[in-house]
Amino acid sequence: MKRANAKASLLFAMTVGALAALPSQAQTRPPSSSGIEVFSDLRLLRAVGASVLAQDARLGLGYARLDAFQIGRLVRFNHAGGKCAGYEVLPPAKPGFLSTTEQRQQELNALAHRAGRDMAWSRVGRREMRGAQDPKIAQALTQLEENNLRQFVGWASAFPNRDNRVENPNTHVEALAAKLRQLGASLRAPIQVDLIDHKSTKQKSIRVRVPGTSRAQEVVVLGAHFDSISFWRGNAPGADDNASGSANIFDVLRVLLAQGPSARTVEFYWYAGEESGLLGSAEIAKDAKANNRQIIGVLQLDMTLFPGNGEMTIGNTNDYTSSWLREKLVGWNQTYALGARIVDDRCGYACSDHASWYRQGYATLMPFEATMDTMNSKIHSPGDVVSNQLSFRHSMIFSKIGLIFAMELANSGERQPY
Image (cartoon, rainbow, N blue to C red; front, side, top):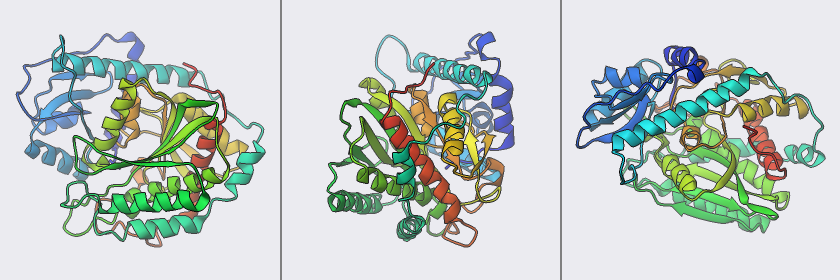
């Protein structure tokens, strides 16, 4: 998880509201011949001395090529200011008539257009209020187990490191894949467990595919990153960031499989290299778009254990997410009496893997453990371990959200209406 600060949130709030009225804010410079291509906040790129090659001032986002030293400075600068990483490493641009810089400018313009559309939809007002419960979903919610979360987080955080940059970056990935195959076999469920290779990292992502029946080509996605990182000496246990979200979707998968097949296909992802610039999810989402996959909605769970605003108070990330799904979250909370107090909040660009999917045009949702200014301060350190400051009762809210998300979207004909 990459932390966002108040300044970045305010910048987004001040600029995105006027998207429809503003022309494209392009500014290009001669591109560098090498470097790591990234999208990041303009102020951060300038702070590390980057040459901004393309930008959209409406979102305060820019494109640059950074060397390893600049990446390190950007990460340290963000961490010191209460925001971690905050950049997306970009897959290679397509060869063709347009230059790389022109293509990146088009991508920024499309991202700004999407954000403007979501903002316009959200101005209309809340639509998803209390509705009629689906008895099957209500019954399935009772099968989620808090102790399963505790056991999974303890297991995952016992690995000394889950960093994508270490010598053996897939030890924990292969262990989780084995655990997933064992789960499928124990439930006699027809699931497909795949390890996904990446060009940007040696670490692999995991995909579990639960095939649909009548509309199998339509896909509902639930995801969490499974890597961890420490900016200090020592291990990176990553209990909250992000063994927690990984545990939530693991238990959602367990309960979902017991319900029998859905109309739509459901896919679960444990992404590689999120902490190093959304590496795994960026390639996966780009591949989905290139293959015209019908992704109905994407849920990202990244940090769910620290009740910074008090138990049962959660953040509803409202930048780079779908207004339609944010409103559904509010409705699900009422309909299924989840008991959460939902607070709108902003995350900043590239704060987690949902940004990869959003940039490719898909509807995304990211509920969060707290508001960004009260989130867990021990992440990205050896201190991110299970402690009495963490609450598995609080984390259970996110398991419930994940199960409702999977079951409702996978058994309906709903799509984003705009």
